[in-house]
Length: 231
Image (cartoon, rainbow, N blue to C red; front, side, top):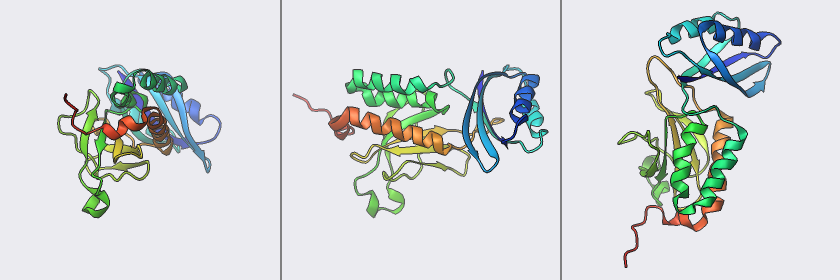
């Protein structure tokens, strides 16, 4: 299976090599490394690895914890192939090619791009500002792995951001800027794995996809949630 491993490590020569060697010794086959952040002598890296299903993840965690200065921020299942920069453009091209299903296409594809479990396009009530907690959102479109009754965070359609629930589920939220429509992406806590929260770069990526899709779909987004017109 594919795993995403996020580690914070000292930004100095040799440390990245130690992490890579430890992953290999533990049985992981590295297929991608993405640097999320380099700041103040520290770096945050995402490793996508092929992990043998019969192996215990605890061995991997113990090996990484033994490296001085290294902290494991999360280990979780990754859906689909490792992400590349061209995938975002390909997704937007698909949205543009079939705008009638553009929103559903976006919702179904985003979890794979962000190593998440599921995503929904949710509608926030127009009078959310006068309600406590911003008002309950209703699901308009959902990806194929979405639970039957997904637990959505209390969202307001103002800005893209990340948030985490007490149960360990992490969300990234990005508004379309039209009709209270918001894209919500989730990583769920599944023992013995523990997903990492969405990094700022991931939230920015989601926001860019949502903004670009909003430009492509335009007035179609205002029709989301409205009953179909019958002759």
